[in-house]
Image 1: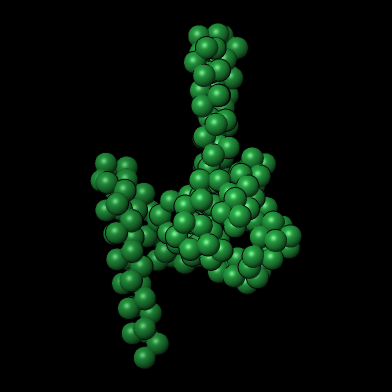
Image 2 (image 1 turned 90 degrees about the vertical axis):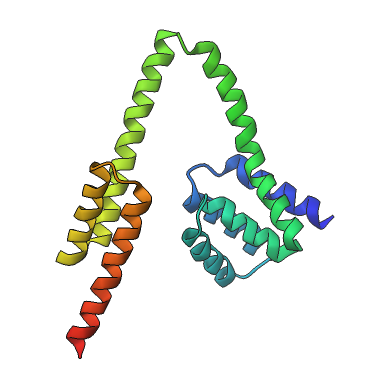
Length: 179
């Protein structure tokens, strides 16, 4: 019974929560904290912070934490499957529809518009992240250096490792200046 309740709740959330981690957080709060009382608001906030720091999709990570808290390892698996099932079904149906219409001029124009819109959203989010992260001259230089590594064709992994090393160096310099 606990597994079915967990699965069904996560399917409902996955069916209606569009927009990623932030919108999922609101649905999870409503269902898991307010309605079901599976966890406290503070726990949900901690799980969200943890989910952001792990690789993967924030909403899936968050749901796995809640499922684990509720019903152990199988609860994590069942909650995750419940959350992603609606998206998988919609993607399969949409893929079939798009495949049928791919050569239609209307569909081709719509896909061009969607690509441009998505690119603008990504650029806007990147600008916001850079603005929030590059709060000093040194962090601004780290951002520029990381971007240059990417432009030069160096793997993003090395760019991130390099940025982390420069950030650690920044901390060492700050500690020495405070002495």
